[in-house]
Structure formats: C-alpha cells, structure tokens
Amino acid sequence: MKNLWKLYGKYFSIHLRSQMEYKTSFLLTTLGQFLVSFSALLTVRFMFLRFYEVDGFTYPEVLLCFAVVLMAFALAECFARGFDTFASMLGNGTFDRILVRPRGTVFQVISMRIELSRLGRVLQAIFVLCIVLPQSGVHWTADKIFTLVLMVAVGVVVFSCLFVVYASICFFTTEGLEFMNIFTDGGREFGMYPFSIYGKEVLRFFTYCVPLALFQYYPLLYLTGRTENRFYMFVPLLGLLFMVPAALLWRVGLKHYKSTGS
Image (cartoon, rainbow, N blue to C red; front, side):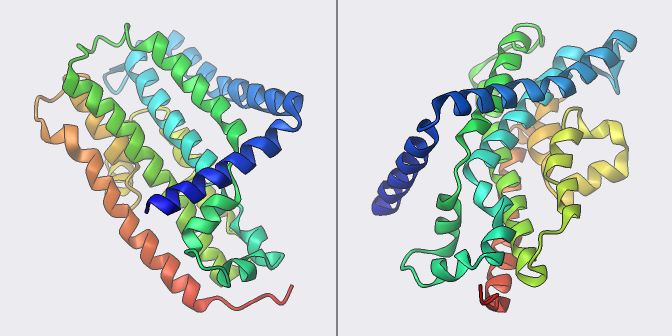
C-alpha cells in the first residue's frame, strides 16, 4: 500500500508539472471553474430574495448544503476524472495498454487523469463555507465539525463511485451514456437544495438507489438541530456501501471487455 501511494504521488507530480507548463492557461481555467458555478449560486440567491425559506430550510442552511455537494463533486471530478472520460480510453485503445501493466486497472484509470483546474470549484465551495458558517445558526461543536467533514469525504466517494458506474457501462456500450449525467452533474445540481424539497419518492431514490441524500440531507438535519439523534451524524458512512455495487459492476464489465482493435 505504501508503494502504491508513492507511485500515485509520482503520477500526481507528473500531472502537476505538465499542467504548470502553461501557467496562464491553468490559472485562467481554474478561475473559470471558480466563476462558472456562481450562476448556480445566483439562482439560489434570487430564489431566496422571493421566498424566505424552502421546505423549512433557510438561506444559510441551503448554502451549507450547496457548499458540501459542490466541494464533494469537485474533488471527485478532480481525482476520479479518468472514469468520467473512460469512453475515450476504450475507443483509442489506451485501456489495452492498462491491462498488460502490473498495477490494478482501477488505480491506473484514476492515475491517468487528474484535473487540478477543478480545484477552482473547491475554492468556491470554501468561499461559500467561509460566508455561511457564521450565519448558519449552527453551534459548531466538535461532533458537528466532524459531521461536516464526513459529509464532504463520503460525498467524494459517492460521486467517484458514480463515475465508476459510468465507466463500467462503457464496457458494454463503448460510448458513454449521457443519462448518467443525471446522477453526476445532475446530482450536483439537485444537491443545491435538501433532497426533501423534491418529494418523498425522490428522497427515497437518492437514499436507497443513488445514495446522495445519505451524505447531504440526513446529516444536514443533525447539523441544523432538526434532530438530536446522533445516528444521523454517522449516516454518511452508509454511503460507503455504494462502493460494493460499483466495484461489482466494474468487475463484470472488465470480464465483458473486448479490445476495439485500435
């Protein structure tokens, strides 16, 4: 495991140096990523100029939700980008080279693509958190800080698993299926608000099928004092179970894989 982390560090260093070759381009792309999500933030702001609350959640509470989901998605997109662009690896024959190398396929796909410019969105999420944390009305004790960190960490895992599911489907279709964007980019957009506002059926779907609500909605109830049950503090950990079907689907797809001959 130590050697694996050391190897990943070398891959990370290579990606960093290559992207720093064109510093101006990198900085402008990162700035663009920082600014592009402000359109979604403005949408939330404009709505709350009209309505004081949504499904009982105030503006600072919704912004807290927004920042958590944005940060989780941005980190997943930064470090698991290889799965999001996996269809191109299949099409140009890159995956054939991966199969003959001694390291695991998942590790190699993750290492093939690291989009550091996506950290611009992370900076925006941090910016929003810096504004909203003092205004949220949350009494930030150690357990609630831990809950917030857990929400982001598990969110990264869940979004990364969604990218793995997308890549696994590519084994059967060669080209990526755009409907998966409903759960990746769409999940980020839906996650601007607590999932309860979309109705009970949608909340159930994002709890039991695609577990976005496990790291977004339920721990938010604990943070905002809507429940004192400490179980909600650890609910995000249930989202880690999503790694099981994602891994199984990847294995099934890997067995199904046939070279494109490129």
